[in-house]
Length: 477
Image (tube, rainbow, N blue to C red):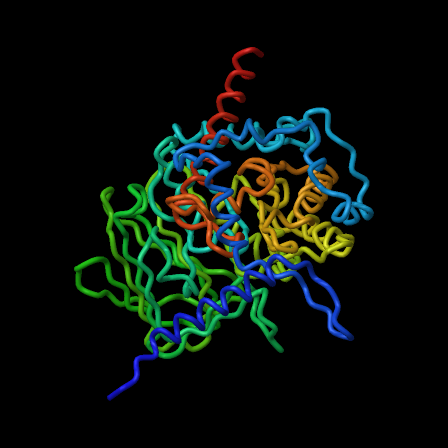
């Protein structure tokens, strides 16, 4: 006859729970040479319950940040974490109540936004307006950017996802386009290489193996990225190279890509107005070929090219060669450059940000060399949460980095947007992570697709409001 140990198991579980509960009540201390911290086995439950009880759910279609505004965006820091400000001279702005509500224009004669919206007005004359968005993992997989792009294309025209890379770490994660590839070696600004080829617009270069292939297919998730009528393929080649390409269900066609000169080449396909929802390329004998990406687009309108790179703090962008980037820009003709980095520099232990300030200072100078005369918009680091003791809250270095980025934008004559306050201010990621639907992941760092939609729509409203201000000022002149 087998013994029943269920009663003993239950007793053991109750005993263990009792011991852990007792340890949670006791303060930390020292026993002999051993230091131990206070345990709190109920902290996650209590934090979640407190958030749900004290914080109303954020509407995923709109965010009212007025409740978070304060005269001084740094006053929430406590004495323990304020030491990180020792390396900065923080002068409270008289208009700090508008942080996150407007785009701050520090360009010469405050013409940066006006130049951009003048380009938007030219869409009605058949022009295309392009935005290059350099970001980190916060926007990878078209999180945030996908919803922003779709909203602005609905308002201003254009369809197609714009620039797409040859390979991607997050291809299965994207909702804007279906992306498949095989037979490629990728070089990037964040990978240590003994030798690397010139890197393209998105900080990558791609070397094909024999019979390498890429395939793109529209999805139904976004209304404006399902089809496109023009494909541009960017490459360099030391010699002519054959390519086999295919549109949707049509028969494959073969061409020879010209090469030989030390320059950027662009191969193009233009179809009928309704375009295609699928496109493939195969490279049977790609000796001497280096690929840099494609652009999928359709007609006049606005296009946002997402150049997100996981782990990009901004500094590695200095590996882009200005003369080579000029060749891309001669084809694409960007009207606004966006830089959104800082997430990888944020930590709880950071107490000196001079090194990062110097790094971004050099990067800002380099961006002006890569895109001379173009308006540059600096989007500050957003909120990031981390565990401080037994509690999760905004990491102490976040507001200091935001203010440092604002100061550098002012120094270089750039546009600036305070994403930290725009998305809600302190502890926004904590609130996002505990909402339903969940707007942030449990790392309190990255947005979910629902969170990307929330913040993407916030950006779309911001651009449309700024356009309305631009037109109002024009009508008064």
